[in-house]
Length: 162
Image 1 (cartoon, rainbow, N blue to C red):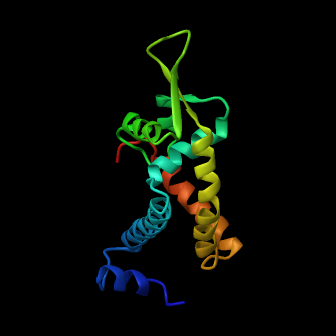
Image 2 (spheres, rainbow, N blue to C red; image 1 turned 60 degrees about the horizontal axis):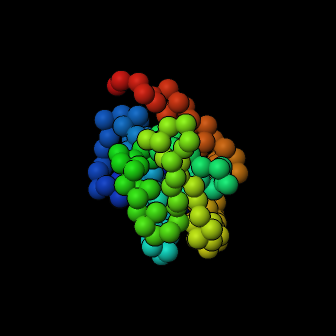
């Protein structure tokens, strides 16, 4: 493993940083982009986006019930500007079904379909490979520490103005 900072310096071709904080933030952004890219490529193998995978994962968690669009949006890992469009695409592919509630006909509930469940079953081994790829680089202790650090970053900043 290279000394701290060498990988980032090579990746962004920058020799100096304003501060250790700037270096840490840039490292976090590069690492997040790297993980996102792994998931994007994995999902693309089966014809969906990582955001669509996230929606399906959320709906599988409540299956056989469903969620309204706003609840799906709240549970997304990455905020998506147009959850309705994501659900529309998944519905067209047969992975999600929507129906109106009895109480409020304007409110639709999205549910994962058997085809959506089957797609997630096919994706699971690929997702485990992504996890394994990362696990080979981080000890269990490092994984816990990374989670702790990430939560410290976003827990305090969610919804807060900079």
